Structure formats: structure tokens, C-alpha cells
Length: 241
Image: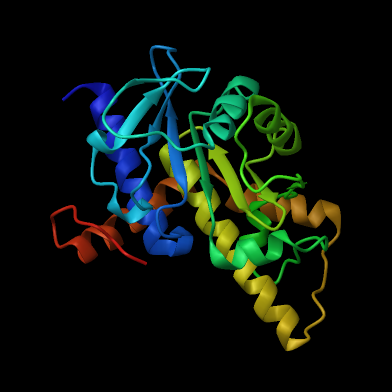
């Protein structure tokens, strides 16, 4: 098995994990992998949901100008999200854009995310990007999103969804899952009327450094894979959230 085949197999697994963990939204949402040969990026094909991505055959290779140059199936119209983040972030190997329910609602808020649970401490700060379009379909729009993301692991797209990224599949999945958990806690805590105690910046930075680590990504990714394998009973099959 080639290294690229193995990477795309892992990325397919990540798609199903994210569906399992609340990121599915019909056929919307997409993940991508930077092509190891520098030709562009491998992106989930369109017309299927995250939970229906079963293997490398469910990805298409897209060049930096949005042209599909390999693979079967169509490419999502929001390819500039991926191309422009890859262009601006040499540290990023995987990019994801999804519509998890709780994070979508929080994306409409201008209030900073409160530390109701440890999940919010995975993030030092979550930037917010506001645009006048429903879909990010041009390089200029993708570049604006990449500027809003800057060097953060995730960005909220106002009234839309989330985009997140990482240096590996494990890292990226953890960012997405923890962000949705933090947003769910935010909505529950605020609905309950609890005032959230806000630790000072130094305390939050220390908490962040303790839990956003490669060791924790590895442990969490291994857990998600075991959970997915139990649901799939040993054979990859569609996961519908």
C-alpha cells in the first residue's frame, strides 16, 4: 500500500469519525489533505456525506486553481477554503470545513467562548470570520478566510459553520471535536444562566499548554478510531449521524 493510499484511508476514517461526533450535515462538509507531490490537495468528493466516505476512492485531487486532475466524482465548490489555507499555512497538512450544530449557532454570536469546560481551553482564542456570501467559492474569499484564521487551529464562519486544520489527521480531528464540545457546553451553560468564571490570561495559557498536546491528540484519535470500529463492526460502512 502506498503512503498516499494510507494517508487517504486515514482521512476517510477521519470523515466518518467527524460524522459520528456531530459534524455531519447531509452531503455538506469536506476534508482535504495536502498532496505530498505538491500538485494541490486531495479533497472529499461532493454529493456524499462525511459518513459515506469509505476510502481513497472518495477523494479527488484538486490543483491550486480549483481544477480536478485526478480521482472520480466532482469537487466541492468551496475548494478555495482549502487551497488558500494551504497556501498561507505551511504547517498545515489537513483542512476541514463542517457544519456542526452547536458550533454553527455559536458562530452567530459575537461573545467570546466561555470556559465552561476544559474543551474551551484547547483553544487560546477562536477567531471569527464574517463574509457577505453563503459559500466560499473564490480565491479572494478563501484568502480572506485564511487571514481571519491566521495561525489559529480553527475559525468560526459567522452564521455558517467552522473551518479547522492541523499538522496531521489526528490533530485536525481533535480540534474539530473539541470545538463542537466547547460550543455545546457554551449553549448549555448560558441557557442555564450560569455566570462563567473567566480565568486570567496566564491561567488559560497554562491550561491550554497542559491539554493541547500531541500525546493527547494521539490518545483521543485512538479512542475515536476504536469507537468507530465498534460501530462499524470491523468493516467500513456509511455512518449517518
